[in-house]
Image 1 (spheres, rainbow, N blue to C red):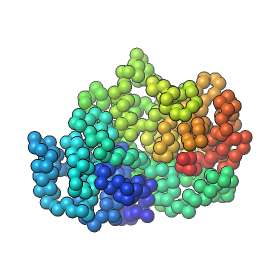
Image 2: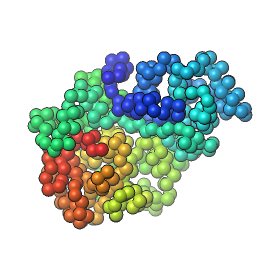
Image 3: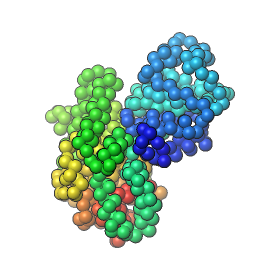
Image 4: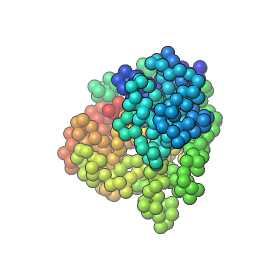
Length: 441
């Protein structure tokens, strides 16, 4: 495990991505894209310290001098020379350079092409807050094919289990998933309780750290932690947008997601923001949120063949928040109602948002199908075995009318039902407990 804040140990799957880059693509600059506070700086810093004998860290938000060096009207060789002088460090064959908050300099991003093409074996990792937004609105010449881009997300439920000291459950969960055999009932109920705790904390490292600091109890301070992160996102909407008008539209879309998910028809409707509004009126703001990794889209499809992306309607979608803890916080759901597994209005919404985040972390694009009063499928995914429909149930009542009807209609060999129910496989429906979504690959 890797040290987090010198007290709490957390292991991140993204460490394996970094190791793979080191072993196979280290001479191609790595660009890590992800929302603010998902743990990018910590895990990259830890990786660099553990794997390289010489490590240079540069934060462009705090070092405007380097930003100015790359913005200067000079050739690239002179810029690199000035850059090395500013670092006051020799860059050797053993050096790893981590440039944080790289979105502050389009010129440095453009220069990554030189670092990749030159004969000297530079090893560079870049990361930054709202880097995805910067790349979407890039004005310079982006070094296409000269940079490796990887996405980092909040901690998954599997990583949450490791953080709370339940690493040994993971191979057991996988075994039950692949063999379709029930989990021991005592363990099954324990893992469902952990899942409900995760609905409250979400996957942000700061919120999980608070949970661990309070001996795995949900504290009043957790509200403050989550609210602080959400407020920082809202502040970014003002800082990294073209004007106040645009930032207001971005914030409206984001703040309205919980209310729209609570509707019976969860399709995101821009008319709920403004009576006469249409998607085209908010398209730029919507793209900003997508690029920032603050929202997860789930697109409507009406054809169920691979690839599903070819049949999606880009103007019809459901939207989820990037972290289920944010949804719990914005809906102001009391933690005790979640932990006690009470029936409450937003129980199904939380489960669906949670499943969306877990599937995205496993690199799935999300699609859904809905025919009012006939059937609704929460998710449809592309896999190596073809299209698989997924139905999400927040509780143990698992009658799957829509799923059964859809499988018969489309002659599909298998469907997945995610719920409180134990592992099982019956009538071509694979039953997956809510705590085991990370196994769906």
